[in-house]
Length: 246
Length: 296
Image (cartoon, rainbow over all chains, first blue to last red; front, side, top):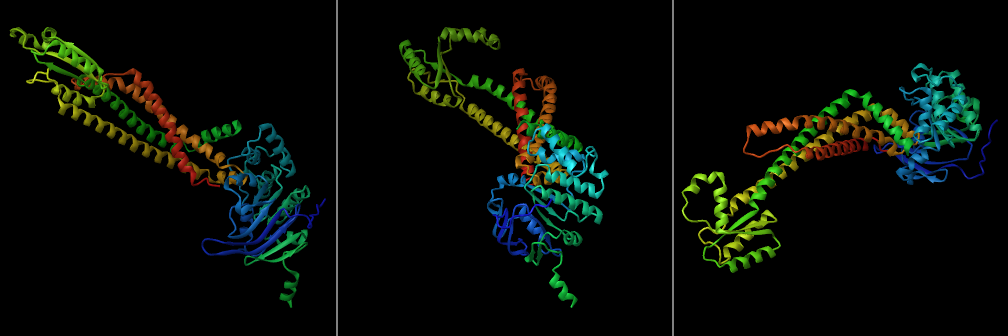
């Protein structure tokens, strides 16, 4: 099942004339205008250093915009008070290229960690973790440590941790960057399933094959600006490619 | 809340054991500091006991009454002194009582045998509330017409002033030493906790990303600091309790003229002070240590 995002409704993520310049003077993003409706699945593509990661960092409020406004679920991130930040992050599930698993915790403990910090009851944690591990097909690996898992399995644990608290948004930064093509595809299936359940997914990626196969919304960023926003796009702009060929 | 506390306690305990070498080094350093602080408190207490003894003695002034002073004049002055807010009590000692007291003192046995008649003055023994007011009472007494002009009072202004000065210097030095020791222990806890923060930086990063509040992240470190401080304080206290009585005995036998004594009641005050100081210093050190690194 594919959930069709309603582009006419009020966006859940909105970038309004956003600029980001780092203290070193590097201009990472320039005049970004972007609207993401609820349930959307969008790929952020572009060469390294184009500004994809900065956009992700702005979305999880690791950085504040230098100019402009970012709204997520009605909250303006730039003006959000620091003490409110944890509560915002609880609405978001994060997945990274390097998995960010804790090596001294088992699979179960890693996934449960996201609920522990919320102060959830043990019985509730047990049920939710079992459900999340089932979603990523890791049932039975509860007591295994990350070092005994393959890259794909580790990323699945990270996804289970990202979705265990039922977030409305999943933000993934190069989630298949460290995986072989077959495993990357498995991971993508998971993201699609999570999206089908209603979560909005924003994914920065370099994986051309996957972007081209899935034909979802593609936002190409180049030199800090949005170069292209296709509702059902490919990794490379077909027109630009044909011009290069010619 | 309780679940978060349980998590913080578990994390703190695990972190303490995971970084055992650093934790033990911190416990040892803080134990030494708290032993020094405890010795400082014990010595301070012992000296304040000794000083209190001296204070009681010098806060009493004897006003010698001239032989020809009528009893009514003495009684009037006694009433005037009793009514004075600075005075605790006034006692009139007749010439006969003064002689009897003199003879009763074993140090005066030989001298007393040679005394003919009664050369001693009658006197008013005045107890003053504050040591600092003895000088004012002395001045008042010297202006009184009934005083013996040859030997008005037994007030030794210089001695009292010097003692007051010494006492305030000793208190000041004690406070300064305590302050230095506190700062040193806060710095030690700070660095221990920073090491723990460094070891757990990945965990902290994940905590922040999954929406942990700052206090949820800081809590375990602050509890670890309190734990370090309390363990150190308990060891320091045990060492001091063991060493206190023999140290007093040794002091007494070496420097007998200073009336130092063992005060078992002070042990409970010392225990309270050390445990509280350990917990507070631990909490403060870890709070400062973790504050910069755990900002979300």
